Image 1 (tube, rainbow, N blue to C red):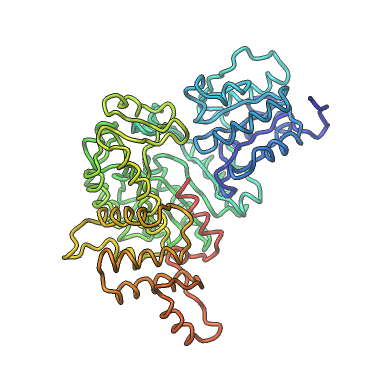
Image 2 (image 1 turned 135 degrees about the horizontal axis):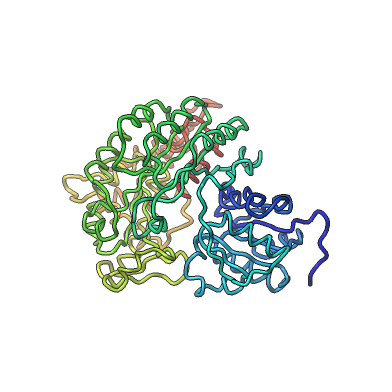
Length: 540
């Protein structure tokens, strides 16, 4: 039943369900910043931004939204929140069908007719919403009423857009990862990515953008994640941005960029080398080292230059390097992927982010569906289930591999034990990929679990695998696991280390400091919040 609009009630609520609280939605703030410019004076004052997480119960989210008593609710829809947001919209329409529900975001910009959430909503804005959403809101509030349910988003010149950074609150700056963009779009055509639909990349006017970054910094912002798909595409821009942060270097500064892997000119290297440990993180999208697969998915990448640049970043700079691989691309086999994984592992990035192919709505990857018998899960996140070269059983094995790799390798808690696990012994032929796959298969057979492993349990299963299955020397394995467990700062008692830990603790002076894990200490700040910021930047 409609409620009377209170004087202090917002007419418009912009909202989304973030993956975690630490992620601050750039999209909502772009819309809010442009309400007056493209919707007319006074519209921003009638708009409120509210953020939730997918961990919250839909009924509680709805209760919070309805307490605001808006006339319009705009929701950002993404692959990670569409299921939960559909429940929210369903409840909203059951309780207050008079409230206009407007959807936007990449998940609803394509195949809108096939989605329940789009059928429930009053309007859907596809593509860019900076201009079209404010105009739609003005029309819904004051008329004339829009005739079309689906609104094709206008794509203006970037100079016509208000920048969103003043929309970040003091709480955002203090507690959350701030997303910024020096450009939009991408000139490359990798078919698994939505950015392949862009004609090119468009850069914001650099002086204007840098002034906004300076204001954020002066307000206390220290965590910046650039969402640009190709940060190092225009070297002059990249140089200026890197220099900006070098000039403002602080112990708690953290900047994350996504870079083109085969383009790292000397001008960039000279600046990258000046960043201290913990301040700079690069996400390097390799995706595949298989030239046939690269060509098939329209990915242009010089593998030799990519390897040289990765080797330089790891060996000559203090930047933290995350390298991405995708399993399940059309025509990729288990062996060809293993070869690429081993090649990447030899280059020693700090983390290998291991993803399984997902069919993002609208991406051209679907053109290979018939030729390569590509079957995707119909439920989000639309993960590939099998292809003509990878059967379902193998795909499940690799899903588990990816999960265990995150727990053991990327967690940073088993640096010494991981070296033993991946070591190519003379009496145990196999590659790094092969050794970890064998461990993954064994762990699944032994536990039938991929989640809810306590640290102590992981220590014990690694000990069992390394000493029983791999037949490594007990003393060598215990020494490695003890080193790792000590560094974690944990105070439990894995069975395989019980006697060693008891003896060690009996001789430890009272009040002696415990060492921290490699992952916790590899950055300048040792605060748990800072660790979370960096992990969130890599995962987002």
